[in-house]
Each structure stands twice: as C-alpha cells, then as structure tokens.
Image (cartoon, rainbow, N blue to C red; front, side, top):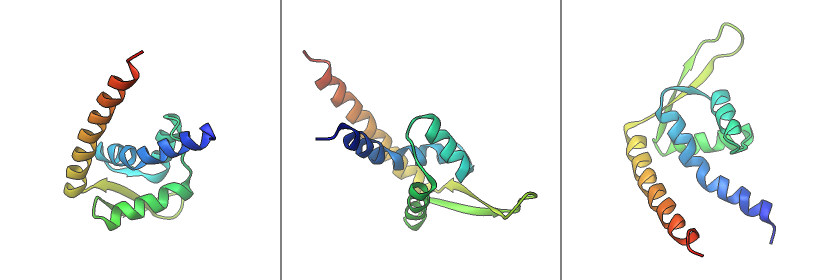
Length: 109
C-alpha cells in the first residue's frame, strides 16, 4: 500500500469542506483560494479546484459574480449561499465528530 496515495485521498476528502469554509469568510477569487490551500499544504492546482467550484455552484452551495479587472480579463469572485452555509454547518458538525472519534481511538495505547 502506498502511503502517498492514502495521504492524497485524505486531502481530497477534506478539500470541499476547506473550500466552503474559506468562501464562507467572504467573497474570494480563485487564485486566493489556491494560495490559502497551498499554504495549508492541501496542495491543489487549478485543474482540481475549478471542477470542484463548478460542482458547488451546480449544487447551489456557492455563487459567483464577475468583476472587471484593470489588468486583464474580468475575475470571477465566489461567495457562499444560504444553502451553502447550512451545508457547511452540517459538514462542520461531521468534522467535529470525526475529530473526536479519531482522537478517542488514536489516544489509546
């Protein structure tokens, strides 16, 4: 079994949760998402992020608006919807439960 593959799968499983959490703090541009995810060592590339953002939009969890840019093409800024906030709250509860369960198991000798 390859540990790197397992690590990648663990990150992928958390990516949607992390992206929604970042967007929930306020309107965000894709490159800002990539920067924060990279700094947090979630290691994501645009090819991974754009399909995820499209799925979140199709599920009505996020929305976007176009903003004109003085130095290039218009930019797409993402924000969370009310439905997305409720979805994120559920994911947050699930995360808390998983963390507690994992700590309970891994803290035993």
